[in-house]
Image (cartoon, rainbow, N blue to C red; front, side):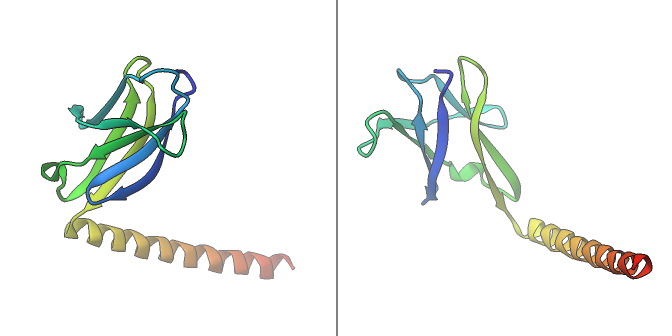
Length: 122
């Protein structure tokens, strides 16, 4: 089970879905949010005989303003196999806009400094 790999396939209608490969037996997984375990479903894959399908229904009560991180880990080794993040809320939208504006201003400053450097050294 050391080659266990979880790959996202989609997030649709509040359910995160992924494919697990490298499992010789039923893997001992844990899905958590802020340290609390979440329910999930494991089933065999119709498309790949050596893969499992992981489905994680995201409870609506876990969604709120800000960033929510969900971890998928191997209980046996404690290793994080994958994670997904849900970002929501109007206040966060303002933060992202402000950060984007700051990045643009810094990029403009760097472009000007680079052009000035190129003129001075040519």
